[in-house]
Length: 190
Image 1 (cartoon, rainbow, N blue to C red):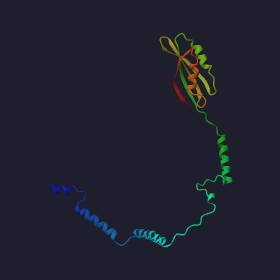
Image 2: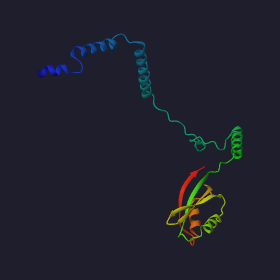
Image 3: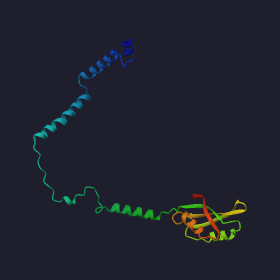
Image 4: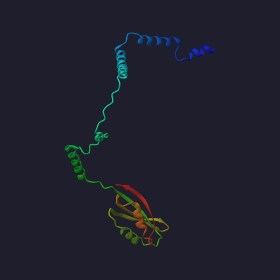
């Protein structure tokens, strides 16, 4: 019973394996085809020159006198052609005429006062007094916080290379009489 299960669960039966072996044997034992004869010729070519090299003694090559002039990495800075120089000059001129895109962002800030008695109009004037290159103040509005306390929500447009959020927060927090804290509500790239 066990021997029967072993024979049933094999991948190939004995007959199929023998048939496959016979097929391969007939295919490779016959007259060499064009493909196999080419392979044999390549093998002969590779084997025979090696034998010839073993028979001949290696001749030493004379050392070149100007080895210092050889540039192994192919840098030809000194030998640039006129055409290459003209192309580089034209590219530089084209690139310099191109309009630079200035990266800008819109920032909405929450400026929170100390209490409900803080003059919010004076607070807004103080915040708008901050002037810098690349800073444009936008709309503002008063938003209720709680218990009658309101906060100033003000927007501005800044150039990313010139003005950062840290700069704005520090300058606004310098008005200690009016400002308790500053939060960034929104920061969007234009």
